[in-house]
Length: 185
Image 1: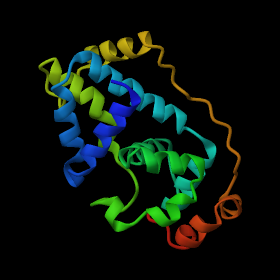
Image 2 (image 1 turned 120 degrees about the horizontal axis):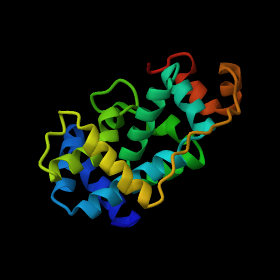
Image 3 (image 1 turned 45 degrees about the horizontal axis):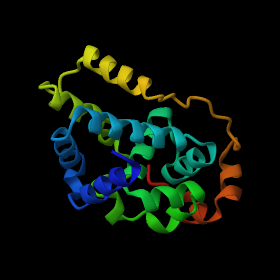
């Protein structure tokens, strides 16, 4: 699987709205182990790429706060929106001031999609005949080894270019106008 195929799958999954995660997991589990690992490698690469201070600041402003886990879920949501939204947001998080709406949030009150972080691993578990609802550390480590062999390295370093909400108001005037006084969280 290449990045074009990856984004095509994401786009197709969006038509399943509230069942996006379920459809994508089931669809991916029908593919080869190699394709599942490719999918996860690409997903994790985008998670690493989006681990940026300015994006975290935008998420913090939109939701009225943003923990480490919440930032992961936010980036999962962002990737689930498709290539165009992902790339526009990375280039300029102010794009989200006009993009975020009830339609784009679905049943969630905030732009977070925790389950989306598990698509690749759950599909891998299904392909291996395991129940993804039951944690299998050995299987998880097996997938991590496959990702590591492909060269995946976690991006865990971040240097913030903002300190508090006053900085965010200056950095993101459109987001501040939309969410500063009334964040989604």
